[in-house]
Image 1: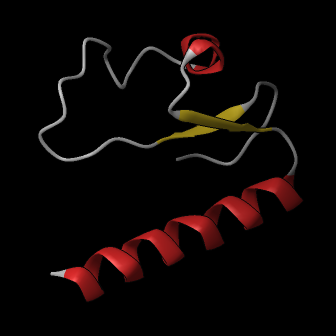
Image 2 (image 1 turned 45 degrees about the vertical axis):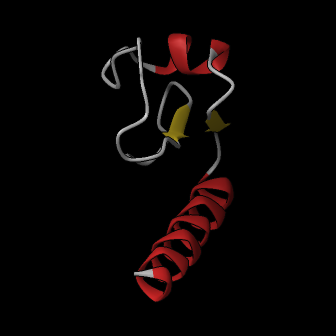
Length: 64
């Protein structure tokens, strides 16, 4: 994940081992079409996205 600058940035969420036909390097345009992506544009949205990632990673660590 990168901070948004001129274009939107995004998070793509997928399960490990899930059958993905899409590349995770396709960029913001393809992410906008992907139901497993969350787009964001502002710095405040970026900060929220960082918090979301931390929550997901914490939950995943607690489940293993």
